[in-house]
Image (tube, rainbow, N blue to C red; front, side):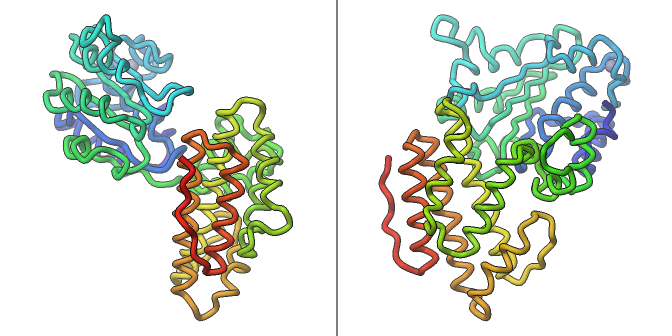
Length: 363
Ligand SMILES: [Zn+2]
């Protein structure tokens, strides 16, 4: 895959191209942007270009055929360190950075990045899920960022600067990644053979909100249909009506027996709701409907109640976003799905009726 195939993000490509040409690569980068827009793909392509043994030192285009390029693609290159949050953990364990108790500071990323490059070029570390660094891990990493080993490049990948410690942000060059266009999403889905979906690819690309991850998640018909039903229900401002809470719980239970899969699905439900309220807020604030998210009809319905009354609507939308993020936080902290859904929908209903909502203490 050449740089041409790393879609979008042209300005980030140009920025790195100039830095590499002038031999002015920074030691630490922080990639931020929504999930599923290709930040990790970009980081791996950059690593391939920097570690390629067939191109020149000032060229970031990988040849794709040399042993180094092949090892980067197979993620087995000895100078490429890849770190991410383990599936069963809420954060990246500190051992990942400084080794376990028996090998403190003799293993882990902070040690390994300082080793002499095995193949003579650079050492590159890609730290995915940087949103999930706890204080201890961040402090260990900070020492490395303060005194980066020569010939090392660290790339942290997160969703926003706000979710990183300011001390980490201040030591990083921030590179922002935006959402992909509908056409780009379609191209990626076709290229990666994700087209055998139950949902037509045009609809899928529109509903993906510029994220390949989201497109893959909603490719199943039942997920797509639930998303539409949720939007319809939220547009009535009465999310608890018709026992809708039960259908949310049924949908969440449909993720399987595994509790972490159920949690993931409920967090996805929260993401759908946030998307709805963001789009609604956008329209209330005078924005145009774009048709990009496939929920124009529902947004229109939601807005009818607030004709000529922009402020209450905007306030309701932002309270609902806040309450939904609280629900996601509760779910991530293992509150039972049924309880989280019931109190979330009750509160959203109260917010929409402009009734006070007491802060919910579920933790
Ligand atoms: Zn190569």
